[in-house]
Amino acid sequence: MKRPLSVTAAAVVALGVLAGCGSSEQPAPAPAADSAAPAADAAAPAAPGATVPGVPPLTGNPTDLTKPSQAKAGTGQPPTKLVTQDVVVGKGTAAKLSDSVDVRYSGTLYPNGELFDASWQQGDEPINFPLSNVVPGFAQGIVGMQPGGRRVIVIPPDLGYGSRTAGPIPAGSTLVFVVDLVKVG
Image (cartoon, rainbow, N blue to C red; front, side, top):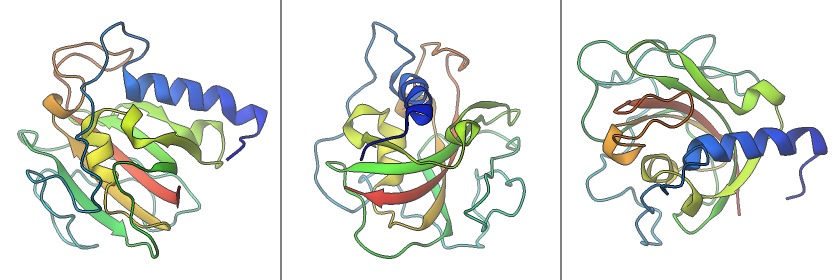
């Protein structure tokens, strides 16, 4: 997908944050499985409206995909495993680890809800990237999503940046993304 010039800079910044902020240390690669199912140690996404331990509340009207939503501060200890919750379930072909996707997203820090990155900051045009080029938790959290869906993905440090600092993301951070899947492929 060709992106308008104004979105290209946002895509570079977003991929930098998601892939390690230009650090010489590369994020751990996502598992090579080419399945639409979540990773074996990841729970299936919770149904929309369900209360999911570890998933912080969201801002705005989370089911309105025309507007951004982001996670507020989490409560209690952050999850130690990948946690996902569908806010809106999409339709069509589900994303696989081998796919490239068009997404809109916001990323916050679990303890305080501080926004560290959002594609929405550059408008509502989605950003395209291969799932193989992002931190494992982000890729695994998108696997199984269908276009038109919105999902909250809570990523523990070992599936994010671990003990590394990555730009505005402190070492050891649990990350929370609200992701809208616009297109698979």
